[in-house]
Amino acid sequence: MIDIHKQLCDLLDQHGAAYRVIEHEPEGRTEIIAKIRGNKIEQSIKSIVVQVRLNRKENLYCLANVPGDSRIDFDGIKRHFDADSVAFASREKAQALTGCAIGAIPPFSFSDQLEVLADPLIRENEEVVFNAGRLDRSIFMSLEDYIRIAKPQFAQIALRG
Image 1: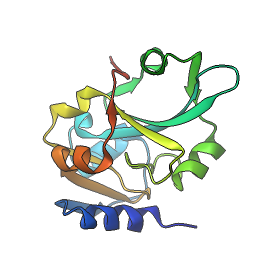
Image 2: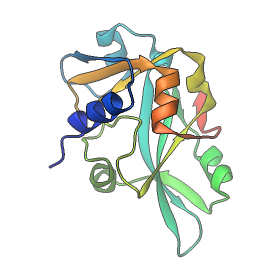
Image 3: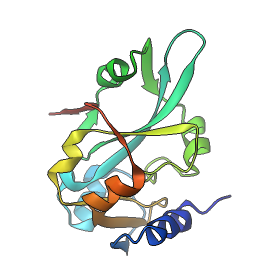
């Protein structure tokens, strides 16, 4: 199996990103891991694989990235793609597309079958933090470097409150 953590660190190194990896107890829930890491919850990027049904014959998968204090706005994704419907991808499909356990998925795609979306709300923090392909590793990096390297499509896909 591919080591996504290593692949992610290699990608960041290749692009000259300034980042730091922290080790912690294994945890995939945003509210709990933010306390363990000592970051503001809205500074976290929560990454979730969704299935977008464009029509009866066409599907695509997206990595939806929202701030840690938000949830996915399926209607926002549906509007962005003018799709018939949007739903969480199955656990098996999400793990196959990301190479990661649920809860460890970083906000980067290493699959040409997985588009990266991000809500503009992630821009509220100069530094972002996210799970780094493992439940016991996280990465802190500048938002600017994240956007430059991940190249997400921005769309209003987050709901707060």
